[in-house]
Amino acid sequence: MINNCQNGSYTEAFVLEALKRKNEIAVTYDNKHYSYIEILTMVCERMMRLRDAGVVPNEIVAVITEDSLDSLISILAVNSAGGAYLPIDRSTPRERIKYICMDAKINCLVASEQLRIEGWNYNLRNVILTSPIVDSEIFKDEDSKKQLIAEIRENAGDLAYVLYTSGSTGVPKGVLVSHKSLNTFRDSIRDIVEYSGTNTIFLANTSFTFDISILETIVTLSYGSRVIISTQKQRLNPKLLRELIITERVNTVQFTPTYINFLIDYFNEELEFFCNLNKILLGGEVLKKNAYLKIAKTTNADIYNCYGPTEATIWATTKKLNKNDESITIGIPLQNYEITIDALDDGIGEICIVSDAVAEGYLNKPELTGERFVATSTGTKMYRTGDLGRFTKTGDLEYMGRRDNQVKIRGFRVEIGEIEYIIESYEKVERSVVLIVNANGKESLVCFYKSMVKIDRTEMILFLRNYLSEYMIPKFFIWKTSFPVTLNGKFDHFSLKKEAEQFLSD
Image 1 (cartoon, rainbow, N blue to C red):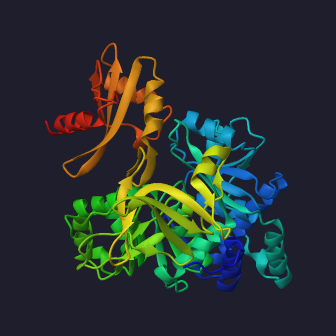
Image 2 (image 1 turned 180 degrees about the vertical axis):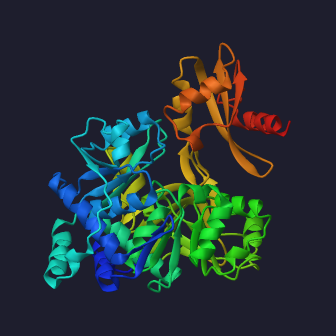
């Protein structure tokens, strides 16, 4: 169902909540609590520095920071200044960062003093150094509050953020998401999360380069709720994460199936700290029923399976799961979303999303934008996902895989073509085929490569780390002097996959 949504910026909603809630806790990070007014003050201080640097509405500003709290402040500040934020993880390879900054025509970058010392300015016009200034006195006067809201309204841009995802041509592509799209999603997800002011305590456990982090943080703050940001140590150490969830009385979480399976395995299915949760949102990749049943044994929380590409602004469908469900589906569209199936055979076809939440398109890629983003007769945009699906007899949407060569690795969307492109740029490699193979219940990337001589695995990995994120680097490399082909002359991926499965089982 599609209804009309307000088109305002989430930043205005956040400011109004901050001025109303003042000293109520907004964010907890690294054992420190920050009130709404403290967060707002830090945001405004950084916003003014951005404006002084000449940031104008809809300008894309890169955000590279060292910790999640600083990232959150910078993102809120960029949007409040009228700019669109482009998050770049510090661990991203330098060559990839250079490409993204050039493609997005970045003139302004938000970074810490330490990153500046390390030479992360990339010859940009402005590098805004973050600082922890907090002076909540500036909002005690009613006129100053009104002036702040007026300035945010006046400087509001149309574009909210740009997220770069893996590209099939060998280079990443930037997805342009407007405030209208974000606000449509924000309005649509409210009834699923059931925000209840600061009684809703949402764990933020996701990198800001992954779009589901937006729900955990800025959407949650715009509804006046609490955000508990985990540190890098807590994300990597299940015992520390469990302690954080218990200590801060977290009641709402969002995980990828891979991450929650990691927790299940680590604690041997004894997830007693889940018993106080109200909502568990799972998404980013396929959820297996056995994993869901293990989770359901430990909690009475509402568990949702969520689906949605970055191009449709976070989630587009949800399914409230039940132990009696015969299978795991991705449910029904959120309010303000519609799903259509461009049927190919037996009701199976490409999943198409119609909504005001659909992104504007891809940055600097008009042809690809024209192929994937289609205007409907009503004027609402439709996004062709490349995912295959079908409707069940009960009206739920069932995910049936990809129609192209795109996969999910630990919740991150990856184009196999990009990985192969980088591997083949190595002078010793003639040809490569990368497959995702399931062995012993775990999915791994396997690379077959053709070359004159066998290449040392360490040598290959050191090269790839210059261009690819760690989750995109194959775990296994298999040397081939030739590739099998089918009768019609195409690479025989089936034979290679069988070979990879045998290799992993040995």
